[in-house]
Image (tube, rainbow, N blue to C red; front, side):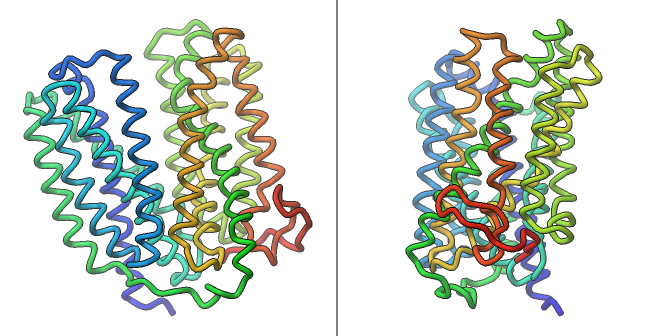
Length: 400
C-alpha cells in the first residue's frame, strides 16, 4: 500500500519537472528577441550557450554533495528559486557582458535544479516500489512544450519579453512554494551501506559512460536531424523540420510508456532494446532514399532513446554508496558532456565526409550501449559483463 504522502510527493515532483522544462523553453523561445536587443552575433551566442552549459554542469556538481548533506527537498527549493529568478536575467540583459553573466547564472540554477529534482525523483520512486522515473522526464518535455506555446503566443501578441519572463519568474516561485512542502524529506535507503563503498566509483564510471553514449546520440539527433534530411534528400526547410518533429514526438511518447516496460521487463531491457531501436533507426537513415522512411527512422531513434537516461538515473541513485545525489551528479555531468560533444563532433566530421555518413558514429555508440546495457541493473542481478568489473549476473529483469 502506497502512502498518500508518497502519491502527493510524486505529483509535486511531476510539477517541478514540468517547471524546469517550462523555464528552459521560456529562454529558448526568446533567443531571437534577446540577441537582437543585446547585439550578440550567432557565433557569440554559441559561445555563450557553451558558458551556460558549463554553468549547468558546475551547478550539478555543487548540488550533489549539498543534496546528500541537507536532503534533496532543500536543494530543490533553493535551485527552483534560483532558476525561476535567473530566467529573467537574459530578458534584462542590455549587452554581451550582461547576457553572458545572466546565462551562466541561469545555467547554474538550471543544472542544480536538474540534479536535485532527479535525486528527489529517485527517493520517491524508491518509496513507490515500481518504475516511475521516465514519467518524470516526460513531464519535463511536457513543460518545455507548454513554455514554447506560451512564449510563441506572447511574442505573437507583442508582449515585451521582459514582462513575459517576469511572469514566468512569478509562476516559478509560486509553483516552488506550493510543491516543496509536499516533497519527501531526506532519508537513507535500507541498503545504503549494504555494499562495499569501493565498488561505487567503478559503477558510477560505467553508468556515466553509458549516459555519455545515449546523450551523445540524443544531441546528434536534436541538432542535425533536420539538416540531414534536407541535405541527403534535397527537401525544403519545412519538410526537413519534420525530422526533428518525428524524433521529439516519439521521444516524449516513449517516456510516458517506458515505466510500464521497465516494470514488466526490467530497466536493462529498456536500455538494451531502446539502443537496438536506435541502431535500426540510424541504419535506416544511412540507406533510406525516401522521406517517409527517413522520418520513420528518426522516429525510431526518438523512441529508442526515450527511456534510457531515466533508468541510468535510477541506477545511479541506488548504488548504496551513501552519497546518492553525488553519484547522480557525476553520472549526469559526464553524460551531459556527451550531449555537447556529439553535435560538435558531427560538425567537425562534416568537413571530411557527408553529414549522413557521420551518423555511423552514433550508430556505433548505440551498438556499444546495447552490449553494455546490463550496467543499469543492481550488481547482484547483472546479466551482462560490465565494462569496468567484468563478470556476469543471472537476470536483467530488475525493477528496484
